Every structure is written in C-alpha cells, then in structure tokens.
Image (cartoon, rainbow, N blue to C red; front, top):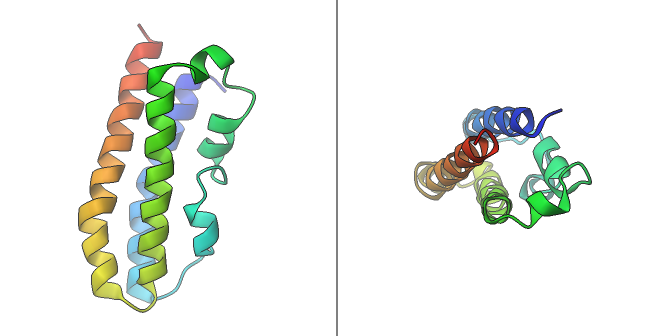
Length: 120
C-alpha cells in the first residue's frame, strides 16, 4: 500500500478511537486491554510506521519523526482514557475533551502535512 494510503487509512482508524473510547466510558468496559492500547506499535499504522516498508530516508525526515512522536502520545493518552473508563468516568470524559482531543488533532494535522509533502 502506498504511503499516502497508509496515512489516510490511519487518520480514519485513529478517528474511530474517539468513538471506541466513548463507548468504553458509557459501558464501563474495554474491548482491548489498556496495555495494548498504550503501545504505539500494535495498531496497523504503528506496525507500518516502525516496519521495513518505510524507507530509512523517510524515517530520517522531520515529519516522520513528528508523526512518530505524536502517534506515541496519542496511544499514551488513549491508554489513560481507557484505564479511567471503567471506574472513573468523569475523569475519562474530561481527558477525552482535553488532552485526548488535542493530541488527536495534532496527530491528524501532522499526518495531513505529511500527505501534502508526499504529493509535493
């Protein structure tokens, strides 16, 4: 799959996390262990990001490094929300509206920038 397609697919997949985490807060249960949510190399995009399909030249770029950092931050905050979702719903909701939302927006923005760079 082309780089641009991987990035676009990841934007959609990470957008779905908002719905997934909100469902976890509503139901008070998770469908994935917190430990897995926190890892930035378990999702399909993370596997691609760390994998051999991304060339060393791309991995050396500033935008790649920014996306990689923001992607890790996204998973950390998603893990925090998930860990609070089962027994501290108000805190989880506040985190969703604050840190999670901000981190998600930064990641999406950097991914969109990356797509523009790829397309010249």
